[in-house]
Image 1: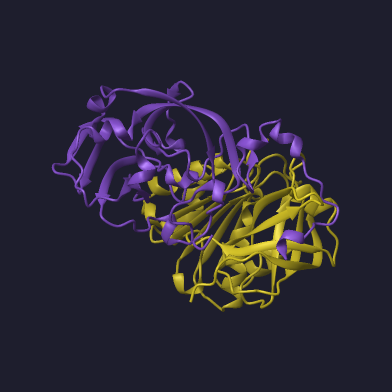
Image 2: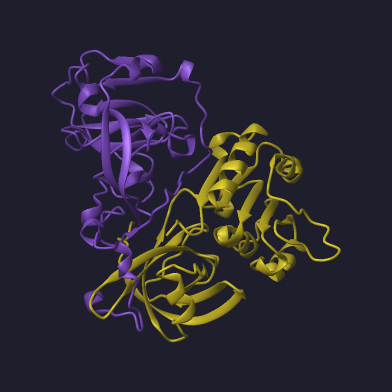
Length: 206
Length: 245
């Protein structure tokens, strides 16, 4: 029924996609700015006390200071990102450390199938391990050639560009490997457990 | 029991002009479910050739109105969906929606308070749902609204806010940032920490805060409230307004 529904008098502003329509997931529209969304106050973390930890189902947990983290092999990423609030931004430019690189420093327990990203401010999000490896996810600390601004998740945020952007946890401080993919913050509040924009997995039962 | 968020065809029951750029659209919903104040609906428009556009709009009405919701919509001049809702939609039209959506930026009478609400522009909409719910539920939770608008003419729900404020335990503070009428006694600058200290002070640091508006306002307010001693988990934020071009 909804397939046949037509909004009387609606034509749309589809020229906005500028020939890039194929890169815009269903129900999304392009923006040129970088909207800020968050559920609470922006945390301010002293870099001297910042650490990044991988723990849970690993043989031995590992933790980096900010200075140590800067010495990890860095990569540049140019990615399209889509927020569940309906905006998509093309060709965002990031610099950071691939999750694959981070995982070279731990031995994963074979029972590990998912991970929980935890953050300053108490935010969490869950990811299947298969969504986090093979070049699909990274911890970014620069955006567009500059240190990542606090309102965009600085000093460092997880970026998982192939999933809705709430998975790209701001102010990330660690990844915990777990044996079950359990809902994080938004995933417990009505949003989809995985969040693939191309399947329009916005809400729990989508 | 959770019900999947299915698209449904709502009917436009009424349209009210709130300010020059803001209208309230009342939708009758065949699959209405009680929302929580602060939640939103997704609106999906479909062109004859199948092209679709979606946006989210906050619910302005309280859940105590079975079968319908008010969506208050600001017209974004170069937008895609809001100009349609403003310029094309008439009473009797069908609109495809799904919701209610959102589970964090919500307040129910049982959530308690005291309640500190801070709004910029059309960011007042979800906060109005909270105030209307507070009144409809007979909640006596002390509440204060600090509401930033450009001019007096841009204040949404001005008369209703006055009426609500004449009742138990709600106080409304306006700040007008671009121009003030003669004899204006309210604030006349952007929201800052001293203003927030004055408004939130009597509520103490146990207040539950909801902030909705443009990013700069939300960032300033949330940081200031944490500095004033509110626990960060009691400061909830939502961004509002155009997200660029």
